[in-house]
Length: 423
Image (cartoon, rainbow, N blue to C red; front, side, top):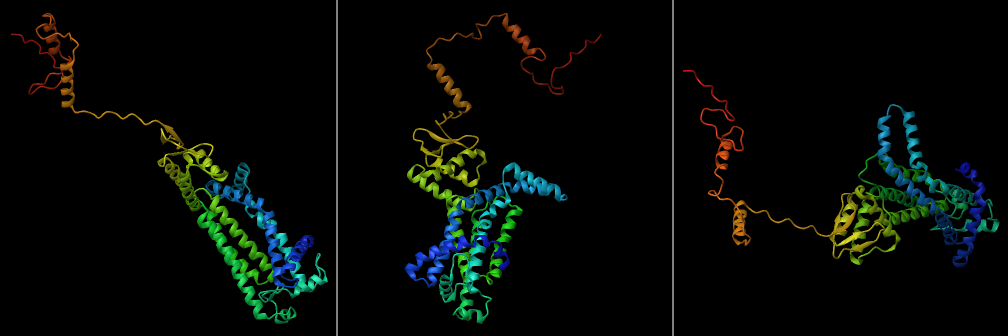
């Protein structure tokens, strides 16, 4: 660890300077040699670093969601070229290039703060070895060595011997209890953060190897923190515990207000949004409008929770618009087109009820009796005499308008005329 920290010695001076500036402020409140002054200085260093890393955190969220979207395509490539690893890697890189995604983007916050982590480790290790480092001079070094957090020196480690701990004016039992509790809290916060991501903010409709990898990391990372944590000074444990708590809170905020589509967190968010919109009759804030706008733009590609949200608005007499706003439909009925987008239209005219044959005949007779217009029709007696034989011959003609019933013993259809017999 000391060898790795030496590679980041170039950033030791800026880190030590920031700690000293915060120590000046907290020292005036709690005393220069107290653990509160030095401990809060480390906590403030973490907060300052994480605020500067917020743009990278946003980029990490976008990269993680883009990777989740690509999981079905990646699975197809793996199945298609499962016997050709080189072609599989080439197709994966081609997919990343076409979609503009980068698998390493999800690790940016950890990679970006690792230099500060190792620089802080180098500073605290120098304090434990009674060496000045950066802007920490001899007087500040003596003050830092006197600082205790819950009875454990700032530079003490779980693996220190009793003589090393005694040199820092502390007991070995106290140091090990404090460091063990902090290691457990550090591992538990890391586990909860990863579990929260897997159970609430992952699209459950897509089952891919990526989800299995994330599930493995949920158990591997806490074990790694527990193993390496016994070699971290108390000050570094404070640093890492603080950054884990910050990550957990930051992730909880993102999951609650900007969840992944198709996840359980999105179902809970859309349920809250539906109650709010139906109560006030409109969306408030750019965040809510952006969510509604994205749902409307999806059309047929909406998932189960988004369709339920749109249908709930329709039942409440509301319609989501393309710009993310919600309007009331007072004189029109809210319907949905084939692509799933809500529109307003007048109600369809109902078709009359179909009547039976007797009702139609009685109704027709009644209408004929009540009609005052004269009708001209030919009765049976008024028909022309020359038309009667013609009609009679047409009825008897084979293949005519009406089909005559076949007599017993004869085939159906037109019959061949019998040839005359010679007598």
